[in-house]
Image (cartoon, rainbow, N blue to C red; front, side):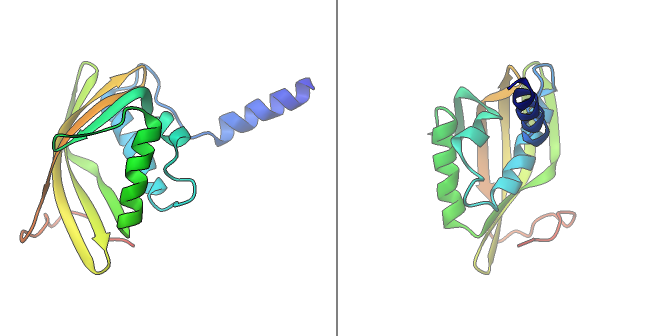
Length: 161
């Protein structure tokens, strides 16, 4: 029985996605979540689940985008992003951030988002702040502005499908 417990523990440690350490820089926590998010966007079955969000978000986490609050908690965040996943062909948080800096348990970011629906590719500029508690995101507040009629910066990577 003890051998099964050891094997199960080793398998869990090997297969589980990385979780930010409590002393990890807030910006690193946000980037790790967005790296996971970009991959999860392509997995309609198991990408956006409450369990997967719980690895990066606290139980009472909220996300506020342009004044609209989503959450609280991983299950509500997963529900919100599954809707986005259904309504678009792809959404990608473009990394690395254009600008960003940490201050205490917060990280400030300026980055771009690319959304693809059919033949339409849309870009948005996003600025905001994320608060990290115990190595996970507790609050994220972004202002998201579409870039209609304005070409994105030349150094953004090409759109991928």
